[in-house]
Amino acid sequence: MKNVRSSALLTPAAAALSALATLACCLPFGIGAAFGALGLSVVFARFQIWFLILSIVLLLLGLIQVLRKGPSCRRRSRTEITLLSIAAVAVIAVVFFPQWVAGLLAGHLP
Amino acid sequence: MTRRKWLIFGVVAGVFLALFWTVAARHQTPAGQPPLADLTHQSLSQLRQEFNAAPDSERVLLLLSPTCPVCIKGSSVLNAVLKSHPGTKIRVFAIWEPILPTDWGRPASTILGNLSDERVLQWWDKRHLVAHLLRESAGGRDPGCCMSNGTLWDVIAVYPPGARWTETLPAPQFFAGPVVRGAPQWDAKVTGNDSRADSSRP
Image 1 (tube, helix red, strand yellow):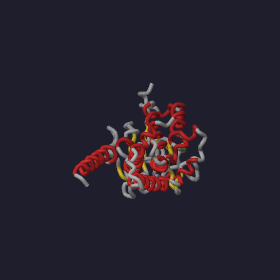
Image 2 (cartoon, rainbow over the protein chains, first blue to last red; image 1 turned 90 degrees about the vertical axis):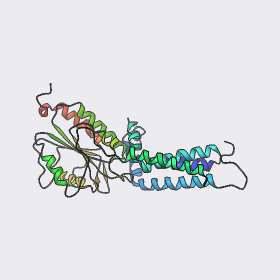
Image 3 (cartoon, each protein chain N blue to C red; image 1 turned 135 degrees about the horizontal axis):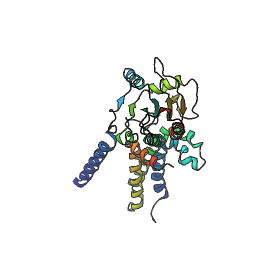
Image 4 (cartoon, rainbow over the protein chains, first blue to last red; image 1 turned 180 degrees about the vertical axis):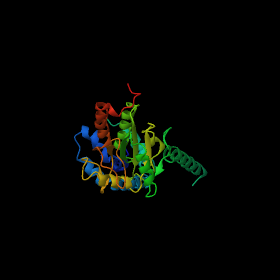
């Protein structure tokens, strides 16, 4: 973890969260309500498409960060690659298998 | 690219296609239900015929988005309500419509399977035809939620026996949203009113 750049960790994490936020439009009726976050539905509903675009952009940014060679001969961090892979799976799942992801989320609603 | 990398790429692409075929590309309704039908201006009359073909039943109209987790939960809740009233004369018309940006395709088998009761008919309404008809027939009644760019979604509308869809959809007797909240409310009414139950029910 010593050589891991924080931006290289944050970017894929943000990409995954942003992708999931696309489907979180109406979660305040379920999960969000438990946290008293009813107003969130309006925010999520208004920016759904932007969350999706943002997640793809962040994923590409993360990919560039990992692939780009720095000034030194530093090896690519396994943590960075693992996080980016997880983010890629999350974004691809939301884009190509949204119904499956929504089904999973629905199964965890109270 | 080396041969090894091409092989890895090929395997990943193959797995992706297989997953896509299995998870997203099948649109089979549960056993006992007719196949998922697309709603168009032409086929709307077919829906109307189905609606009017069960005048002695209570008819339930659902508007749902296939990638909204709360809608999917609502469909499961409604299915549980139906299962708890097996002998009751009810016909459910589940209308799936694209609302979220992720609603780019017809509902997949896994989503359709949430409404497994045989009294359910499922449709894909890409043009929001039923949502607009329901909004007009509701006469300004607001379910208190569930409107996206002027299109109703995640709502439940219930029509009593005898209601008939003529030129316009009749005004619903019960109208609520989201379905996950409305279905239990309607269930309370079902439990409190046994007049619709057929003679096979104890």
